[in-house]
Each structure stands twice: as structure tokens, then as C-alpha cells.
Length: 97
Image (cartoon, rainbow, N blue to C red; front, side, top):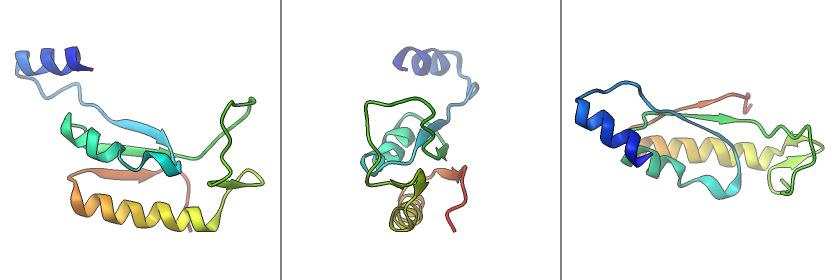
């Protein structure tokens, strides 16, 4: 990442741009803060998809393989808070309502 940013800066280019895509989880609320420090302006939140067994469990986020209502509300509130604080666009790739 550091090398990419250094080369882009050295060449005086704004492209290629970076965006982040992540799975919505309780422990990744600080991603937007880091993303903005390296010039990322767009963040994509994807649903948890676990086709194969994973070494991590999503008990705080899922019930019967669907987002819990409480967690959907928490995502929505976090998006409002983060976009008010940081210059970043957040797109959710699954309906929250």
C-alpha cells in the first residue's frame, strides 16, 4: 500500500483510485478513518456470505444466515456517524431496511 501511494504521489497522479470493500462486522468501524488517511473516498459494505466453513463466527451480526435487526440499525447509525466525520462515501451492498 505504501509503495502504491508513493508511486502515485511521485507521478502526480490521482488515478488509479482506491476503494475499500469489506464485510460488515462489529469490529471494523475504524476502517473509514484509516481509509481517508490514504485517500480512499469510497467504502463498500458487503453482506456476510459464508458458503464454506469459516474459522470465525458471526454471532453478533447474523441469525439464521441473515443480518440481525439490531445489527442493521447499528450499521445505519455507524454510516451516519462516519460520513458526518470523514469525507467518504459508503455504499451498502445489501438493503438495511
